[in-house]
Image (cartoon, rainbow, N blue to C red; front, side, top):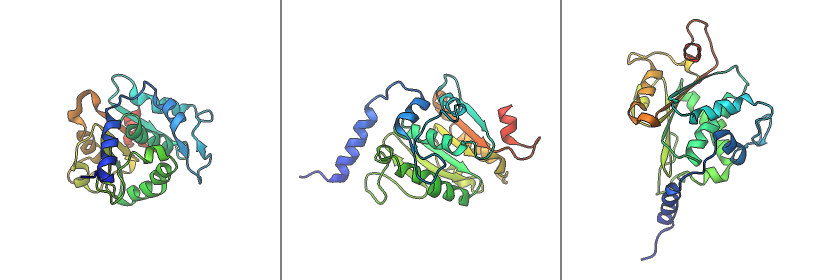
Length: 223
């Protein structure tokens, strides 16, 4: 019986997941593998020469003992680029399941379609590791994208159900200062709980532009 193309693709991804990743820190991986798409201020292969502080923001996610990272950044200082690189690192180099949350469903859709999708399209080696839309060997839709070794799920603070749907070792909470507490609790805490059972693999990444001093989640976490 001939083997279908979808089975071959699934087998290829499974074998790739068994190969241990080379020892390389995230910023070095990004400079070797990430291309910033057209439409950005500096398109092309990513380089941190103009923003060396971003290297530390990337590398900290692999520091021994780190379980939470708070990124407090002003607008237009590269926060989105850093987040995209972290997400891609845990897709391509060290595959793990991830949950990415933003304040509203609209925020999630905007990030996915105008930021993440163009970046993945500009990086075919990373895109190749994702399940194909409408394919039979994984899931690739507006809520979840699977890849060998894990999946990336999108959630938003206004829908606690999307924060409880699955558990993952890596959680990203973007623009936490704009996330409103619901009757079910603080969405940032709800999201963090999704990684609580993963022990040493747990990593909670929180990022935001600070809003109101004294009430800012990201300021409290950063300090």
